[in-house]
Amino acid sequence: MLLWFCCIGFARAQVPNDHIAHRRVLKTEEAVWSNTTGCTVQRSCVDESLTGKCVEYHNDQWFEFTPATSGNYFVNISGQTCRDTRGVQLVVLTGKPCEPATYNIISCTSLASQDDIFVLLQALQSRQTYLLNVDGYLNDQCRFKIEVSTKPNGIPAAVTPVIPAGNFVQNGNVTLHWALPDSISATGFRILRREASQFKAVENGRKAVARDSYGKLLKDYSFSDTLTKPGSYLYQVVAFGTTNEVPVLIKQEWRTLRNVANAPIWYQLPLEKYPNKAELAISITDAATGKILQRVVFRKQKNKPEQGRLLVNNWLAGGIKTIRVEIQERKKEKIISGSNFLVDLDK
Image (cartoon, rainbow, N blue to C red; front, side):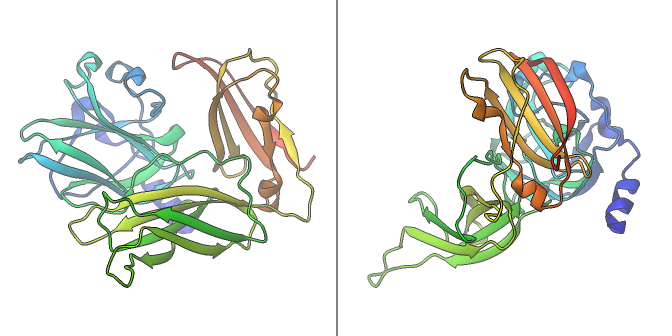
């Protein structure tokens, strides 16, 4: 805990590349440290309509990269130390700096963890300058390391799926099933697991790619695990191969273990004032720590009160007493109304 506070304290000074005119130039295979703390947004230099729902800018900063040779490159982001669990988000684009009308989005990545990840950029052109914009996801304050490389580091970047209302496990037993696509060359699989309130995923096991008695590759695989503590757990299966083969995310799946000794405890979000078909973005965080617990975007449907129903048993079991609820009503990517309030779960 002391180390975490030291890192955040070290990162309080605003970085020079907070301003696009002072963007940091990255060289191939050069890993540099930066942070989003204290950064501000130059609204005239960004356009959220270009990235859809992928990014909402809060505290961005700028880098640029010009490949010496054409080909595939990887943006590796590692060593994240953040205030919340959310981590950073990355936009890669071409165009004239601070002229959004000229921007062409190459890649947009928005995560909800602090895992070491890589983003594949395919067929970059030599002597073409690419702009990289890094922002704290939902205003998270993060220290991180960024590198443009010819080799990936970490796991493939992917949007974290929404925690489903069901998908509960019985007696803590979890079995995952997946298939190896014909298009992927791999020698094995890494199985990663992360509880919703945790910062990073941990490797939970490995599986080797197998062959039958005739030497033919087996396509279907499974992995079993046992959960001992109530919570929602994200499982990720990553296929890996030789040094020259890029790891591929095969599967993502949430599994939830609840305390069956207690009856389900629900909290109903106050959505009555919002009209039918309103687009609502809802974020639930632990009021004590700021850690994100759940985030979902949906259109309100008439006569479907379950849309605003939250199962809170796991949060209570984890010692969470109070949650912060943020509700935004949006229209064409713009926020037209919002509310932010605290809810005591144990009352």
